[in-house]
Length: 247
Image 1: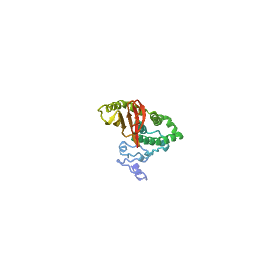
Image 2: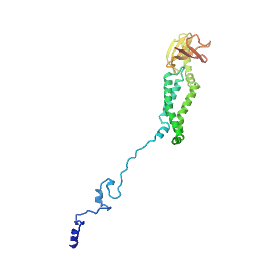
Image 3: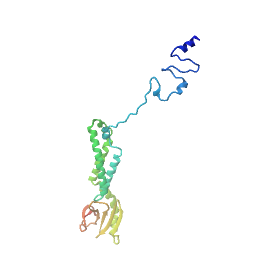
Image 4: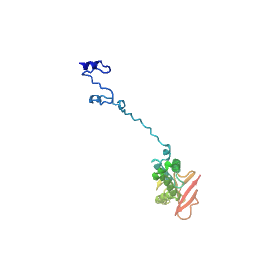
């Protein structure tokens, strides 16, 4: 009884009752029942509070952006530009649409490639990337050099004409026969042509070629170049001439 009285009379001591389960403040372990009802936010727990992580913004280096290797889209676009140039150069007078598209796309890619390469070469942080991605860096100039060499040596022109020559000659012989047709329009070999017979010769006008004139081929049997017809002629081989009619 004396102990109970002292407990009730002393200040700061709450009376103990059978249902009182309060604990003094401090780092006291929680019971399983109280732990289940503790707040989920770890930052509210007393003692060593756990602070929530903050999102760290990702910073993209402008130097890395402008010195990085060409993107994967540039290589297919460069290949497409080279294909346009090769196809455009394979016809007499050239296919204007394909040549213009190839030149425009090639210049656009060059404007995007050259500054990036120079920035990577002059900046110290960009030089390791030049060596690590040297295949991607070298792809565009290599394709450009190969395309320029093929066009310079007339490879597309010669290959396309060689593949089409048998069909062109068969049509020319048929048209110059006794009752052969005087005109023909359509694809012959690899060329879309409009053919007409002129005094025993055959003029093949290749469509969509040239800028200010019409270009094509002339088939003339042995006996001299066909200077009697309109236009200019450049001898290729045998009875074949490159023909053009300027406006």
